[in-house]
Each structure stands twice: as C-alpha cells, then as structure tokens.
Length: 209
Image (cartoon, rainbow, N blue to C red):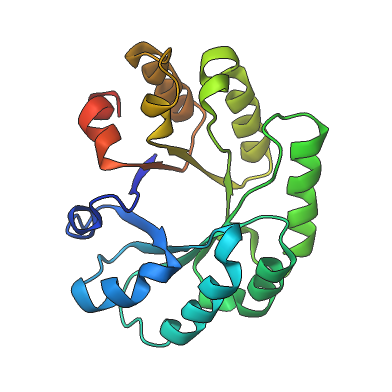
C-alpha cells in the first residue's frame, strides 16, 4: 500500500520523494513556481463545485508542467463535463481516479462503478483507480463494507484508493485510535493500492501505517 499526502503542508509532501501528491487544480500556478515535483505521481484534483474553473486552469497549465512525475487526474464521477474531458484527454494522464457514488456495496455503488467504466471504456483499465470513500459513521458501524468493496475491485483487477482524512478525528468524537487501527489493518489486508492522508493524521496515527 502506498501513502499519498493531501495538500495540508504540501511542501513537506513534495520534498518526500517516496510519496504521491494530491492537490486541487486551482493551486497549480502557485505550486508550479514554488516546487520541484517528486518523480512519482502528481495528482490534479477537481471538485464538482468548480469543475469549469478547474478544467480551464488545467488546460492553461498542463503544457507548462515539465516534470518527470507521472500525471494523474482525481476525481471523476458521473459528471458529464468531467467525463467528456477525460474521454478527450485521458492520454495525457498516467492515472485517473474514479468515484462511484453510493456508500454501500449494494446496487447503487456497483451500478455507478459499472456505468463509469462503460463511459470510460476508451481508457486502459490499468490507468483507473477507484476511490472507495471512507465515511466516519461506517468506520464505527460497518467496516465489512470496505472489505466487500476491495474484494470486488480486486476481482475486477482494479486499483483502489481511500482517503483517511481530517474528518475521522474532527467530525466523529466517538472514533478512537483503535477504530482507526482496525480500519488501516482492514485496508492493508484488502490490498488497498493507495491511502491518501493528511499530515495531521500522520502525526496522530502514523504508527498504524
């Protein structure tokens, strides 16, 4: 399992040449000027509420990224504009993260995953990474869901990513260190490909990784 740093204290992540880096597209101009990127993966991240702005900035700066880093695009869900963009420009990226909507393994999640896979059928499968999305309430109540998702993705020979972020220790007072330890153990056991973490998480729970 590989650790991906999120953008909190990005400078620290960028100086670690063994890490992947994930940040939002609107930050590209600043970080292009400021940092020498590591030689593994740079993930550009788009959020639904600023898709148009994000794609415009990405188009403007993509040609200027001169780095040996692999270039990934995160995240793609059932958003027509994003899907159309990836259909056109998938050849520019080494990795593309897709996010099936629906936080259970029941019909909604698998249907949305299959729908995204169909829409992105022109993208080589080895480029795709599926975000299994960690929710605090399910960490407490239903860890087996993540095991099922990972088994499902392993059977399809798809890579996986999970963000274990700030909300695990900010929004759920009931979550303990033992809960997180159990979650991390399950993700490792399930052959999760990438875990995306914030530095605060590393400070608190880095020993579990």
